[in-house]
Structure formats: C-alpha cells, structure tokens
Length: 492
Ligand code: G6P
Image 1 (spheres, helix red, strand yellow):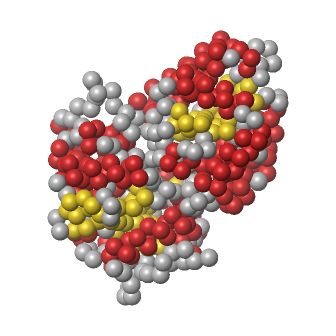
Image 2: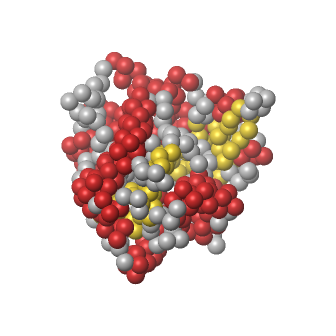
Image 3: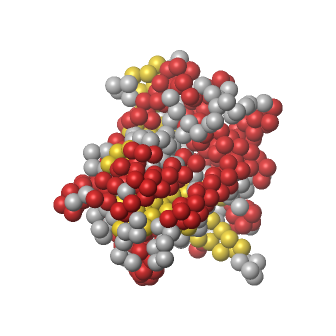
C-alpha cells in the first residue's frame, strides 16, 4: 500500500539516526539498526520515495564510521539499504553542549516542566556558550539538508521532515539557505505552556519559536501540545494565531499546525514479539512470577517517567492491601538513558534505593515483590508486556508514551492500563485506561488495586478498545499524514 504522497526526495533529519556503531574487542566497527516505531515508520517510506536521512554521530564509534565514509554517507551494507544515511561528524565539544546542555538539560526540562525552580535553571555565561554550540549544531544539519536537497536532481523539490527539539532551529536555517524547500517539523515531546516556557532567556525562547516557524508545517502528538505551542507563538513573538484553522503567521510566513498522534504498527510489533528470543524471556519471567499477577512498567530511566512515585504507589499498595502480599510481582524495567547527565545518574540511584527498601520491607521466602532491571533488553520488555496483567504508565509529562500503546497490543492477558493524565496518549486512550494524576501516589495505588481486581469481561473490552486506539495511526500513515499536510500548505 502506498502511503507517502508522490513528490520529490524525502530528507529526514534527527539527532539519533536509524543506525549506530559499536567497536568490538578486535577493534572493528559493527552497525546495529535502531528499533522503535519512528525509525521503522520513517524507514518504511524509503521503499516508496528516495530518502536521505541526516543524523548526528552520537559516540566515538559513530564518529569513526562517519569519518571513514565519504562525505559521511554510510555504506548501504551497514544501514540495511533503503535510506541514504548521512551521519554528521559534529565536533565532540559542540555536540556535547548542544545535546547534553541545551537539548536534554534545558529544552527537555522546559517542555517536561522538570525544574526545581528555586534552584534551577540559572542562565549565565556558560549557557551563552552552550547556546552558540546549539546554533552551530543546528546549522550543520541545515547545511547538510540543503546540500542533499541540491543533489536531488530535477523534478519535484525535495521535502524535509525535521524531528524533535534538538533541531528546533534547523527549519528556519534551512529555509534561509534554500528558500522554497517544503519543510515539516515534528515535536515528539510535550510543549510547555507560556508561563513555564518563559523560564528560557527571552531571546532564546523567541529564537526557538522563530526557528520552528521556519517550517511550513509543525506537527505535534496531541492537541494540548499544539495549543501550548500556538499560545507561546502568540505570547512571545506576537505571531498571528488562527486556532480554528491551526495556522500561525509570523514575519510574512505561514506555518500550519498539525496534530498527528503517532501510533503502533500492530502487525509488525506482534510479529516481533512472536520471535523465539521473546518466548525464551517469557519462560524466564513466568518462572519468576510463579503464577502471580504481574504489574509491569517499561521506561527509559528518565526523570519525566516518574518511576519513583510508581514504586511508592506499589509500596503503598502492599501496605493498604496486604491481601496482595505474595500474590503480585512488580516488574520494573528501566533501561539506562542519558547517563552523561548527573540528574539522570542520581535519579537512577534513587530508583534503585527505593527498590531495595521495598524488597527489604516485604520480600518473603519464595516471593520477590519487585524485580527492577536497569538494563536494555528489548526482547525481555516485549515478553513482560505480553505477560502483564497491569501496565503502569505514570509519567509526570510525556509527549505521547508509546509503551502505553504497545502494551495493550502485545498483552496475552488483556492487561489493564494505569495511565497518567499528563501523557499525550491520554487523549486517545483516556476513555479505556484507568487515569491517574501522576503526582497522586495514593490515587495511583487505588488504580493499581482496581486494575488487579477488574473483572475478566471488563479487562477484555477495555484492552481491545485500547489496542484499537493504539494502532489507529501507525508510523507509515503518521508520516504520510504530515506530508499531505505539508503539500497542502505549500501548494505542492
Ligand atoms: C525521546 C525523544 C527522542 C529521543 C528519545 C531517546 O523520545 O523525543 O528524540 O531519541 O527520547 O533519547 P536519547 O537522548 O537517548 O536519544
């Protein structure tokens, strides 16, 4: 089935690309393809139109692969064919400032409202230097995209699809370099409301918005984030906002705003979860659970995922409902993320400490109340989702949260989902999940109890409604929808 509307070459830009490298013990580089819905959805489009994917080298091994490839264009044998992948060898200090200090420690914190504001943020000379690096990083992407667009030959113009907060300045930079290139941007995060967004230095906040408005189409995961973006454009830039038409005009340029709630390719995900490596993990997990009910969570060890309060809710459940002691096991899989940042290392340590306390308080011969694993094991995560009776997804704030969508599709046991009202997924799943305020540990505890005691009939009907909503907009269609909107806006 053709998804992508006809047109010129597709240029994708994202910080994390579809492939990464590792150096083996013998010194050779080996490539592995990234998983996840976005990578597979975007890659699938390469079957339909020529595609160039520009991404950053994230590690020393990536940098070596980029340096040894002519023009940074990776060998198709390493990337699995499909898209031409151009990996940018950004100077390590520029990359570290742009990725760690601006993208992940500042923009991510603003959009997820993670600051402990009496102490942070504090913008001084160091931030000015980091911001200059962030500009340089975005410029390198814009230059690479402009070059790739020029190389596309005649015919329909290349269309650029730029991903996420790391690349919020690149749309305007590309438009300046190559006027007339149709440009879409997509935000995979929430967007902060103006009151919080104003934490950014004023000119920085304005530059981010103007950078995004260099795009012809700006996409968001739910209406709430799109509204917040439009509110910020109005409040900080004085842009003309038409909320009904979902359009923002600024500096003589019009940007259409879209809501594209990324979903899951159910058939592909189920096929992956039916492979033998997942079956082996299911056997091991079933042995550990020994017939008990399973409450499952799968996250990056990410501050916004609210893992500590999730564990507190589980501890409260074992206090308030002692009947569950010995009858339930909580599998908390929190794979490492952004470990260069002290906040993330501290958070991971806090998760581990609380897990030890819960274990010390409740473990009994033959019963491990909690299995916390801080290691990346995708087959085991899929296995846990298949076995889950309850899926706990309680982020403080989250762009979408694909685990909330994947869980019901994968579950062999019609899992009940306890879901934060602050996840983008709430817009689609809210009617069928058990909704919680992520800061309300006691409410979360009650929701866990309700999820564990729900009748089989109710579980089945809720789970099938959740799975249907979760697969409503699979990645290939999600991309096609954005390109259609882009074509409408640019009149292509
Ligand atoms: C979020 C962001 C993505 C990012 C991912 C993993 O989902 O929206 O852009 O790739 O987190 O974070 P990382 O820093 O490891 O790329």
